[in-house]
Image (cartoon, rainbow over all chains, first blue to last red; front, side, top):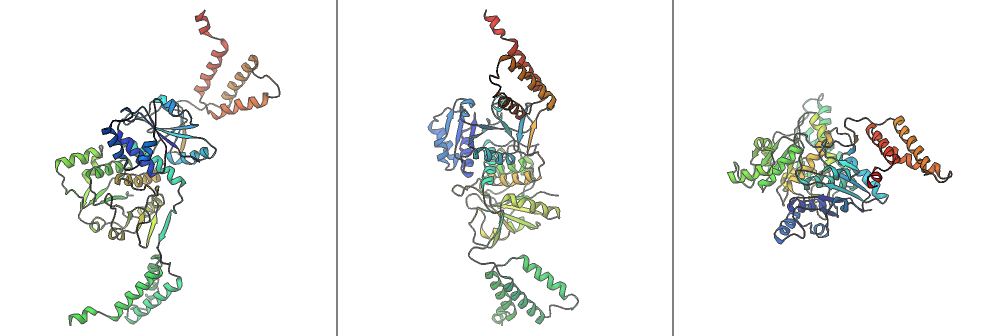
Amino acid sequence: MTDPIIILVGPQMVENIGMTARAMMNCALPELRIVNPRDPWPLDDWLKERLYAASSGADDILNDAKLYATVTEAIADLNHVYATTARGQREMVKRWLTPRAAMPEMQQRMASGQKIGILFGPERTGLINDDVTLSNDIISIPMNPEFSSLNLAQAVLLLGYEWYQFNDRTPASVLSIGNSQPATKDELMNFISRLEQELETAGFFTTEELRPTMQRNLRNTLQRAEMTEQEVRTWHGVIKALTVGPKRGKKAS
Amino acid sequence: MTDPIIILVGPQMVENIGMTARAMMNCALPELRIVNPRDPWPLDDWLKERLYAASSGADDILNDAKLYATVTEAIADLNHVYATTARGQREMVKRWLTPRAAMPEMQQRMASGQKIGILFGPERTGLINDDVTLSNDIISIPMNPEFSSLNLAQAVLLLGYEWYQFNDRTPASVLSIGNSQPATKDELMNFISRLEQELETAGFFTTEELRPTMQRNLRNTLQRAEMTEQEVRTWHGVIKALTVGPKRGKKAS
């Protein structure tokens, strides 16, 4: 299985090409194609330096990038091409997708052996209609309609981000406890019993009527804390320190 | 209902603050707080110019940004705070969330009146452990583990993007046909009948044995095209032009 190919059409600034490479590397997208960039390649040393500086180390992608004179040539070996454009600007009969909706269908196409490309137009002007027509579908990133202009590399980042998330298996939510173990209910109840006994001794429960509610509140707080074994031991120490009494009192005397 | 508040802790470059404002405006996040920036505020004219240039017009967010000396002060009025950090760097007992998983719970908290903040640390170093400890949970953006360093404003963009998507109602996939109407099945079948009749006349169906398969193939292509009324009319014109014969032949004679 391959990855979608990022195709920059007529990019104006070498910095944006470099930042695109960085965004692609962040998202593990390896293949960049560049169509008719403003500055002719191979770049002179000054432009090359700016290009690589902007990529923050994503050199491999820049070194492997392929150059084309036209979009038609750049997509010749591909089976399905998506054009990215701002929403609602095109008067043509075309399917529009959100980036998120595009990912599962991209994956299905690739799983059946298709090669996929995503076109990004020049800064400011975007893709011309003829290039959109060469594509199968349009991907448009939902953004604040009153301020929707994205930097080129940021648009690539958002597409790459969606692709990476779609394939990523990071747990959505996890309590990280390192080498420690989650406390058992028995360990937690031992601590709660000790706390409540000390509170009893200290006269914390002023009325028998309120005791059940107060106990439940304390217990619920501690349940929510999801303590580790180590943390329960630390809190045993806290109770001990508080009940044995102030050392600072001794020092002060 | 409010929006999550973006809090930059110790940002080093005014360009990154400006690009953060741009990313926030893209995602309709209005409130920016800045803790102890490297360059003291109010900025001198030279830095101010770079700040506003980088924001590409997101001036309102910069004008309304609030400055704080410490994280403690910046989060004093909030109920729940998320710290953003790179994955797996912290040896503390803390809940980790993906940006996507954080959004529904942020929304639930806000719906019950809570004020939410998201902390972003300084470029390169990230948040110090004491600031992470001031937070309830950690949000970490899943990225290529071999190249996971994101520009500050890009990290803000990705969080803002997830928030915007979570609240956005853009259809995932839609065929945009402007003022035209989707063709009815009757209009499509009329066209198919005409095409097949003309193909019959032209001797396209060479064997009766293959005719059903060939017909089904042609019909499936046309079904997949999901034509509009206007497009069906255009294709009627195509058949007419092809069968009436070559005008260019006349010209050439």
